[in-house]
Length: 248
Image (cartoon, rainbow, N blue to C red; front, top):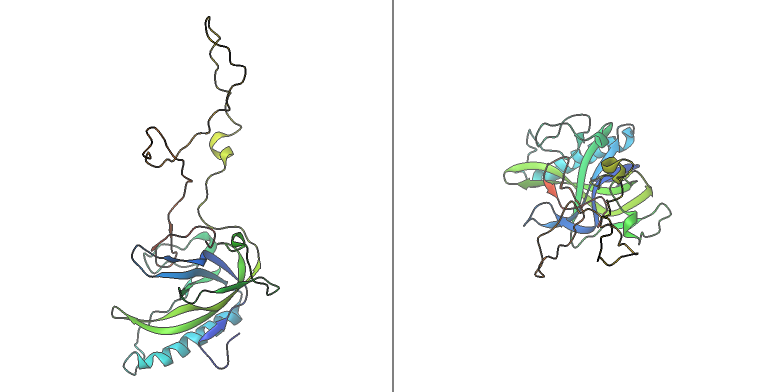
């Protein structure tokens, strides 16, 4: 719905969330301002929400005249994109999860954290319940900006986010062990007991392979395992994101 007293504010129908940073603010790149943010995938079948967003963007343009010397520029950058098309950043197609959707991102400053509730309006306390791939609704506000000579309309989280249901998580994850090892591998060969050797009736468990390691610590020979991760990029701007699947 659109707020009658604020024509630039829209509460969406059900959307899917990607690149979720709703519980902890993150910077898009080193040195940038930290913000709460998410990418929003709006189904094209929800024509009512799309119409409200289009109207809110036009209202933001009208209000933006005060920032744009009293006129609306002929070319104004808008925040919503066709998920069946190509990314404005590099002309490459959007990811598969964007197909059949309108794609836009929204953010808010560190001092304005979003309030996240479930479908029964209860605050969500478990951070693992907030993740990329979940479905929900979100209140957003559209506003005009001028930045580095570019004039456009941005999208900002307007306080409230509701999770309506779970979905398949989106984002980087470690491959399943069976995809690497199939049905497993033969047990390690045990050397035959030799004369004079002390027999060991309790063999230690074989050490799990570690395919990614960090540099050695100050203790000689000590190596700490590190969980495999993959750098994520905003599907709209192609800027690197520090967030993972979960909103923390």
